[in-house]
Image 1 (cartoon, one colour):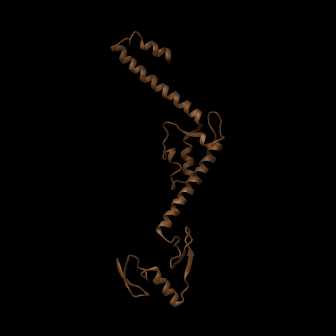
Image 2 (cartoon, helix red, strand yellow):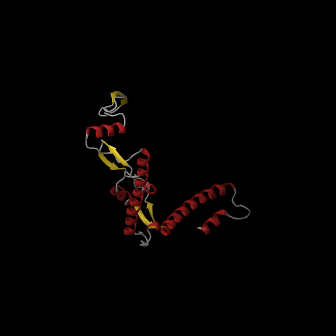
Length: 192
């Protein structure tokens, strides 16, 4: 901390900024008015309150206004990102059936064995990720409609279930060949 004296009131104050000459904004304003220096003015970008300052970079009157602006900016940014991804989805359409009417009905299906940097559910929330990075990431997926997506996953689940049930049947048939008179192996074979 540096101890300095205010240029207007002469009061001692502590600061981390070497260039600071006044203890507060009111002293700075009084000094500018007394010496007829040109006062820079503008308005807060959020509430419109008048700002009198020496630093041209100041845009907000308080931390609350700055936080409100950042929250609003994030919301606007997400809407823009959503619309960019929606246009991309409509342009490509479903790889299987060609559907492209509603972007919310189109899903990104991950192809196994590909290297993914971003999860598709996080695409709308990343501010630091550029549109080109997102497009490269989406190109690693297959864009398909929800019906085709469910069909693919249903077939995958059926294969997993069959494998699990057959393994259970092999184990059970060594211990108990049939349960209540029903041969499990024949039942499973007829079902699949």
